[in-house]
Each structure stands twice: as structure tokens, then as C-alpha cells.
Amino acid sequence: MQLDLDFIRRQFPSFEVPSLQGKSFFENAGGSYTCSQVQDRLFRFYRERKVQPYAPYEASRLGGEEMDEARMRLAAMLGVETDELSFGPSTTQNTYVLSQAVAQWLEPGQSIIVTNQDHEANSGPWRRLAERGIIVKEWCINPETGLLDIQDLKSLLGNDVRMVCFPHCSNVVAAVNPVAEITALVRAAGAYSCVDGVSYAPHGFPNVDSLGADIYLFSAYKTYGPHQGIMVIRRELGMSLPNQGHYFNSDSLYKRFTPAGPDHAQVAACAGMADYVDEVYAHHFDAEAAPAERCAQVHDLFRAHEVLLAQPILDYLLAKNSAQLIGPTSAQDRAPTIAVKLQIPGEEAAKKLAPFGVMAGGGDFYAVRPLQAMNISPEHGVLRLSFVHYTGPKDVDRLLSALDHVL
Ligand SMILES: Cc1ncc(COP(=O)(O)O)c(C=O)c1O
Image (cartoon, rainbow, N blue to C red):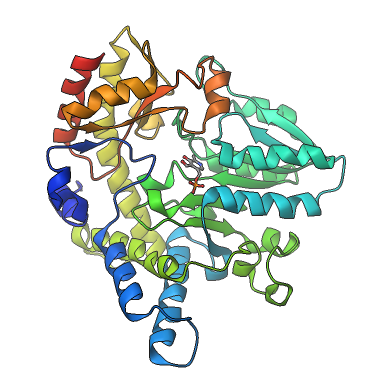
């Protein structure tokens, strides 16, 4: 089964917008286009339900139901219970709140493990726990390859370790880490895992239950949705960590780590991501299937399409002496978030690509630690070419011919 690209692109109004014609979008790791299913729900909420939800009048009842629907359907897709999923303003804020809870839960002398492959969102808030007497151990990448080695994690794990924070996939290295293997090791050592899925989830929503993560985070504005952070916390850990919300809501798992009042409209609009996955599934497959199974099939469709498109870009960059490709050379082993170090700063390269209709970004992408670990100065930065399943062969052709002019 192949992805029907025309069908896919019809789901994204941005492809119809006159100002975006003749352009190819290669900064998807910064934020994706939004599917029409999400836009329609957001518009409907603002127009018809912009009232305090959960009150006993029709507009409010419907608004509350749409918010609940979003949580229920996304949780089902991800293979977790409805109340194990919550919405916060962003992943950075979600990890910040979690780190405050973990700080209250740990005792001085206990340890956590962080990596230097993570985006700062899943790194800085955890590292700051050192100021409160927590021992923070660093699982370091190989400076040549940017990869994490599981043997190194094994030597860091011990009775003192309570939490291990790591990325499903880094936003500059892009290697897909073996999450299920890592979480099994972490659990066997008596610790919990916190996985940053922000750079992975746009390439197909994962089954969080199969991954074995105790916490799994991603950002809906990169998965075709509105600007929300989505956080899964499995019940056992979530009910053990100190509540960070209002005291009278402490029995509601999904309210325990989201102290800000929810953005009603955006939460409700998140159900549009589930609509989108279901519509993609229905267009490509006949068989009835449960939400997590539909999601898995769509994940594999996206992934196969992306792998096919990514390899020529990787091969092209590998053949250029002026470009240092970051991360795995095989598309199978990585997300199509392709960072390259060039002789010119990353931002300058991105600027040069723009007149050729290539929308890309350059800089450090808040992945300051991984870049520094690979001896790349954040000021010089990298050019990042990131795409998702709605990208087509014509976009890749445009990119490669633009790169011919710029590299
Ligand atoms: C890998 C990764 N983690 C975390 C974040 C932070 O997400 P948010 O913008 O939702 O705080 C980003 C944002 O770019 C990211 O790429």
C-alpha cells in the first residue's frame, strides 16, 4: 500500500494558498501545516462554543464534549487510558511542571539521568534539579556520530536512579532511538522513563503502551494540530508524583500536571488530528480496526513514504564535500529531519535557499548541547531540512536543485 499523496495534500489548506504556491516546505520539525480537520474544529469552537465548557446549556455541553473527545480519541490512538493523556501549553512547559513534581518526590542523593542528545526542553528543567541536591548523571552521545550507546546507559543505571529522560528522536541528530529497549532496561533497574517524542510523533503517532514509556511528550503544532503540548503519564507514576494542580482536582490524573487553565478551543481542536488519521486510514484500508491499529497502519504508511523520499537527500548531501551530514546516513534509521553543517552558518544557508522556493531553517534549534557535543558551535549552527509525509517528490527535486546553487 502506497500513500495517496494527492489525497493527503487535499487535507491541508496550506497547499491551496496562493502565497505558498511554488514553494516547498522543509522546516516541518519547527511546526507542521495544520490539517483541515483541526482547522474546522477550531473554527467551529470559536464560532459556536466559545463559552465556559461543562455547564448545562447546549453550547457549553458541546464544547466540553469536544474537549473530552479529543483526549479520549488521542489516548485510544496512542494505546493509553483516556485520563493518562493531558494537554498543556507546550512540551517545554509540560517538562517544567513534571520536573517540579519530580523534585518534590525525590530525596537528596537520588539520581536522574539526562542526555546531551535532547532538545533543551527535556534537558534543562531536569538538570536544574541538581540545585536541589539531586544527582544528575549525563548519558552522552558519541561526538562523531551523535548517537547514544545503550552500553553507556547500562553503566549509569543503578539503585540510586529514579528517572531517565531521553528523546525518541533528536531534532538535529534524528536517529530513532530504540525506545522499547531503553524503557525495559530503565524499568528493570527500578527507574521511570520520560521520553521526548516531539521530533518523532510527526512521522506517525506511536503506540506509547508498546514503547513502555512512563511519560511520553509531544507537541501538537508539529503533528498537524494546534499549539498544544500533549503529555502521556502512565497511571502508576502519575498518581505517585505530587499533584501540581489544584488540591481538589488531585484525583483526576489528567489535571495533576497541568496547572494552567486549559485552552478550551485548542484542546477541542486536537480531536481533528484523530479525524485526520481516521480519514487517512479509511482512504487507504478497508478493514475495520481499533483506533490504535488504525494509527499503526497510518504510521507505517507515512514512514514508508518518508524513507523513500529521504534517502536521495541523504545521498546527495553525503556526496558533497562541503556538507557534514549529522546523524544516520540510512533513511531507515532516522527521521527525515536532516541537519547539515556547512562552511557557511546554517541561517545564512537557509536564507540563500528561500529565493529558490525552499522554506528551510538554520541555527541551533535549541539543541545547543548536542551541537556543542559534536563540536559544532551553536552560533554557526546547522541548516535543517525537515519534511513529513505530505512532502512529495517534486519538493525533493526543488530542494536538490536549490542546494546545487547554494552548496
Ligand atoms: C525535540 C523537541 N523537543 C521539545 C521541543 C519543545 O516543544 P514546545 O515548543 O512544545 O515547547 C521541541 C521544539 O522544537 C523539539 O524539537
